[in-house]
Length: 386
Ligand SMILES: [Zn+2]
Image (tube, rainbow, N blue to C red; front, top):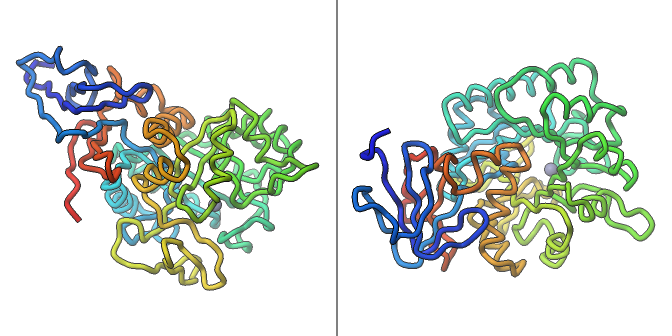
């Protein structure tokens, strides 16, 4: 690598995943970060671009729950091209890496989705693998998932989920609906397992955690509520330093007061969007399992009023987190980058601005918490003015 391949971005503030540095610069070396240093230590030989006053540079956002975007829903179109469209739609909101999320469907369609994610990952560094949300869920907590397709796993499912693969795999399931030892097998095969759409008791949740379950999908939503004598999954999540929980901070899914309580837990919060097709798209409706879903006042609603994912992007999630939950911007940014990276096992090269890390970076204007530009593996994309 020659000196000429180095270039730097300088900003008034750099959040490196741990600390907020003033007057710092990120030096890129191709697709990687060479170093983060005070602007005063920048070599005059390294071409340097200075971002507008007050701008921040922060690790790219990592969204572990993305059902769709750019008017495409992954379940309706499980192809590598659809994943590319979804990636592009979310990137303008700061998402530089994500898990396309495939909800409850037939095994054959799951197989197609897994193959599509694998192919997309080969071409697009933003695709980290796949999140399979369902179909091993509690019918009582189906939400918008098709109850007809919810089922118990069999040997063929285990084979499909444990097959050799290149990307990450996150599986949301209801522990009380899978046989004992199932979660341990998935974990041993390298899958990350998350509780969701579940009526598990506290004891059932603790047993699942003993088998390797560590995630909680959209904590509070579609799970047994916290109760006086049956604390359920929520208490198990909040009291465990080994728990990682996804939060949908859209002002609709969970009350800000409840979310503020979650931030006082021992585990690791992660901002997710649960985004549907309309995010970064032009339309205000889409179809799921053949039913029309409409965006009404910032919510995705089925005709019976059931919430069907969210009309949320990561920049808005960070903004809501800072404003509605009253946390410092640095915490909101960490919940959107470093925490999800560490949860799915890519924290050694994503989620921080540090030497050797992939150059996945977001430049933001902290006033409106708006994205100015993104870099994925060192490649820049400016965000066009709306
Ligand atoms: Zn869900």
